Image (cartoon, rainbow, N blue to C red; front, side, top):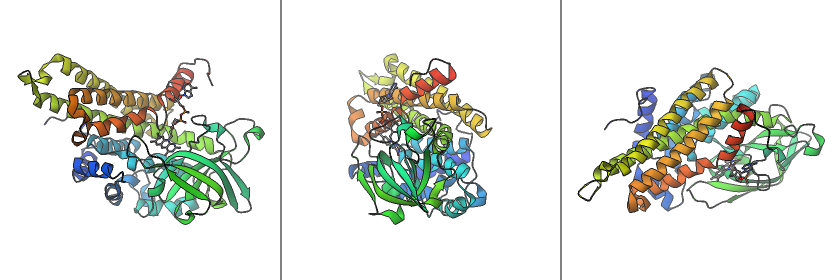
Length: 389
Ligand SMILES: Cc1cc2nc3c(=O)[nH]c(=O)nc-3n(C[C@H](O)[C@H](O)[C@H](O)COP(=O)(O)OP(=O)(O)OC[C@H]3O[C@@H](n4cnc5c(N)ncnc54)[C@H](O)[C@@H]3O)c2cc1C
């Protein structure tokens, strides 16, 4: 069968290796995990042990020393194979915060075991129930007392906490009323989840539309050693923003992988399914939406490489990273709709996987950043339109 991704020959060693792993975790595997609302532990462990989730860690710490483009190809191929990167992608997109802003001691302590697959850094706690996207209003507060910080507050939608050893936490360390700029006074901590069960951190799972392990977190005099502060106290918002361009590009690659999966699935079904004595794909009413969705995925894919190359060259890439996330999430959602429509009633049947992927790809319009917030970034920072909030 022809590969609809014209870049399939680029990074072909990575693509082949990921496809090989994903073959062992087929449709039946994902359906059985979803049926029991379980976590794809074996899949994540296989990727971990093969070193694919620590590729962004430099080789000096035992990691793969890969580029962001290569990392994006890994996530693309996972989603392209019908699997879901959401179970394990965070280790890639939050790694930059530890790499760029962590101390040498922190990096020596944590990076080698993460690279060896003995520790997971898969959780990132930013969102709060009462502040939502307005991150600088973060209320969770970490108060320094001697060599510890005492944390009180609440987070929501914090994913993979139950399957991660470490979590990055954003908390206020100076009250908002006492800072000159609202982006100041926020700090990032590396929380060791292993030693903290029942010690002031309560984790309450949230049932949701996709089979995604995500939780409410309640901090009640929860202690973090001062050594686990990342970088300088009060500068955490900048560290988080720094990592967001990488996050946007990697998430876009997942959308692109989904898009190719939906297009492939739709064209296959359109070729096989015979109604009115001919394949439904012979009708242009079926062909055109598939072709249009494909064109949009290809356009987003091009933008992904441009954004990743700028990032790797340490050039400003906020505009491209945001735009590719927007374009890719829209294109994958369009492809999902087209794929479901092409399948008619069978699109709703669990055994075809279309309805599962449909729900999974819908999430990218909201998390980790919602579409409106990206549009407002483009309007304000790229086009110079007046600031709206
Ligand atoms: C399954 C799942 C997993 C998640 N995992 C994590 C995680 O691991 N860690 C984490 O920190 N967070 C996580 N999130 C949270 C996610 O990042 C947020 O849901 C997302 O950023 C949107 O925030 P919100 O839900 O509070 O929406 P709100 O901020 O309440 O916004 C609601 C809607 O209003 C729109 N809106 C808000 N303000 C404006 C404005 N000024 N102009 C125009 N439109 C506006 C938004 O775009 C959005 O569509 C997850 C969410 C989900 C659903």
